[in-house]
Length: 348
Image (cartoon, rainbow, N blue to C red):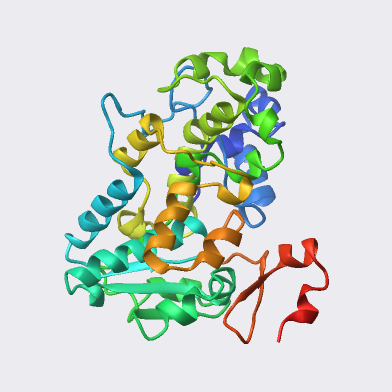
């Protein structure tokens, strides 16, 4: 049935260069078949929704999250995280925590474990991960997950069975690290620019987009001054809805109410709009610093916090940056080889 795909991914169709021809001829079914054959099996749905509502669109899109009012919001990132953990634990349901090994899901997981442990509720948490998660997380799985909390280490190809009995009891929640990128601005946008470029006025760096995007930028809930601001807003505004609905594209509709994006609350959005905590106080290795700082406090793993690059992590991520564990308990990353090819020869 194609209607759910159209409901959740209208702009995936809209962005296709042939849509104008299809719309002129009225061959809507042909358009749907073309989209299905072109994208359904080959591409994860990422499309742009203008949450500000200022850019006209041919489709009438409903259910889009508008920006919350962040006036006077001063809560720190760690406190928003703690409140979200408590909210989820208060549901009384088992929390299947989808851990990819990346910054967002790692911060989420260990914050949940910390709050749950303090209330003797650790039994409510079950980590869902696979071999790629373990690799991307460096030493975290062996040192702080294995023998510490219930987990399912799923080999490749098992993912669909997560949503079937006996693993799924019909009540459990599945909590993802989704929408973390949108709070900080996506790294795969930011990494392509120098710190100097990121600090330039946004109009100097985005001349080709100004006419089209200016109405949305003027409707931003916080002033857009620098190019970094611009890249943050691009993700916070245009990619939010896409990521929020991402899992709806891949799982049975009966599970949609039980898939929760940890960072998808209005308070996280308010923090993103109003906070004065530096998102990247140094180079790209400090990207998402409030989350890295909290991970360090919760895990004590300086190696992970200092060296974990920001990848677009997914639950089945395959582009690994983590390379090996050393006999001394350290972690070897691909970037270590880039910087010093001899490093692998000096590891015992």
